[in-house]
Length: 100
Image (cartoon, rainbow, N blue to C red; front, side, top):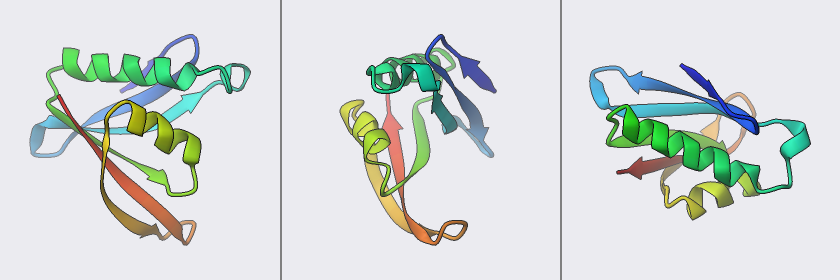
């Protein structure tokens, strides 16, 4: 399901056969809010939504080179779980995890 705020939007789905684990994707800040720390606000909104919906863990992926997004996740206390080569872009990517 997609959730939107004034600053941007994100999507969350339940991991198949793991109802307490969410898969987070489509984390996007609208262009007019970029560079204004809106990503931190949107990440907080996402984490509150996860808690409210009863998720105890979540995962997402980022490109290794996306330093801004990686910094947002680190500040929000998500942890790098693993890395892999993204077959679409042939570049390094990270798998992040979060626990309540």
